Length: 524
View 1: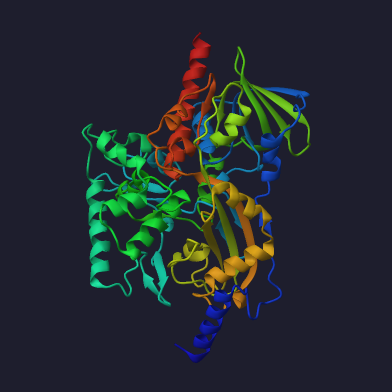
View 2: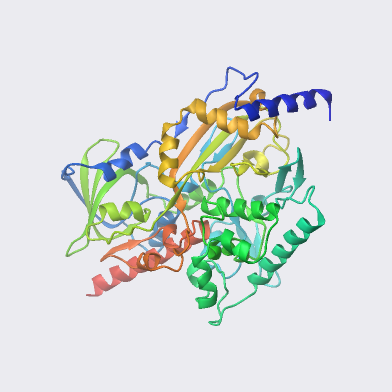
């Protein structure tokens, strides 16, 4: 190691340990906090008086409330089925939800979901969508999908910062003794075995979509243990393995192994057959753009939906146009509520109140990096509260040797109970976020203060449903599957696991239900 880098590393470690943001910060660093629509959304929760009546009354065939991935997939399938009048409403005023993205002079970048694992043939709806978008370009001699090379994650894919250096892969093997390595290997072998196991009903134990999984009681009982309890029960003791499992749970569920069920924890490792992923500079925001291109004429209306009720002839949706501030109401033949259930139950008349829902808060930051990008796409720091960062320019074909990049940093705020973590997020200033993010990354990048020119922060107060023990197999999740009159639901919290494949399945299923309702109505 060069002397200059060694000195910087020691100084950087000292600054991080003391909580000091920088010993020599560039004064030109700028940034902002995004995701402030909560101030509008909280009006539904805190409303003390009646909402104004809609002065403007409009008619449409289908309203879709929520333009996240589930809502977009539903809109696409309805559009392809010939539904002409689809009104898409969203509090943010743009499509994507947790798959939204941004762009600056250096690169596009994600604000949330940033990859999709290669789907197997059993993921029919994902395969269908990827064929339509040109991600799958054909089939080989064995009829396996051929994926466009431009979207397959380039090597090196993953690395882990541990003991002061980077190692390939995320399993913390560097410096591990034989006992620790044996336990990591044994766990990996067991997860591999579970991928091929089936319950007494013939279904895979852990499948995607979740509802295709086995209902074998022996395995469903694991939903009533935490993943940490299951690890201890099975004799897994290595702190390195426990870190890897905890990291994995936090990555997909926004909460560690002590908070999520063993069933959900095992699902993370045993539900997919392929470890390769598809990704883009803007993450899943690329998919959002391509889906919108398939629906010319359908735009997202910037609106706060504050009421939804069944009528004799359809559904009445009461809203406020956030561009003009004017109230309006939409009368639709049927409606898809593609919002999370904790919102839906506050605005849908007669919808039963569910109390067992927990949502994990997240923060995502994009850092404009004034240097050649780090080598790997996904960069994780061992034993840090963050999940590390991904490199937006890793997939940029128009920049074979980029001199700048954008790094997208992720952190679930699971150090506090969700409500307390959300309040803490809202209380933080931009400077506070800047300090926390740079201090987290500084051990691996001691000169980070000289390299970051812009640092923007996105707050996701209710980032994803949390599969706490008992939720996956519980009555509340089961009750979320049913339509409420002509209001049909499409959101990943119905699955208990917030991943792209579930959003695709929920959106497609909701569209099919709507088409059946409309056909029944027309034939009746």
